Length: 77
Image 1 (tube, rainbow, N blue to C red):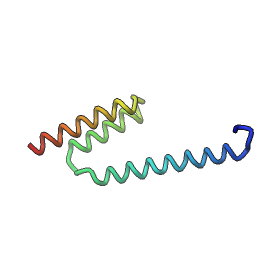
Image 2 (cartoon, rainbow, N blue to C red; image 1 turned 90 degrees about the horizontal axis):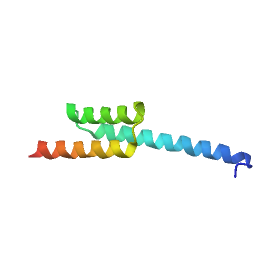
Image 3 (cartoon, helix red, strand yellow; image 1 turned 90 degrees about the vertical axis):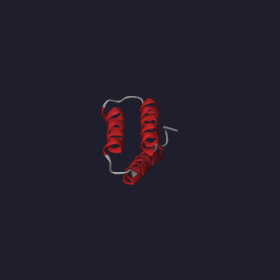
């Protein structure tokens, strides 16, 4: 497929759309989070771990998800 000139253009457009959708989903999710210290710290920690430290997304989301569920459970009890 690399011999076709439009392949590069199409894949560039698809990548830009994927980045835009990911950014939109992140902003939408961030707007729904309660404005307390722990959820914001979990969001910031997840961003730092994945974007700045380049830790594996799977393990970071697994740990952050566990921490979020544990915090919500403890807060509800």
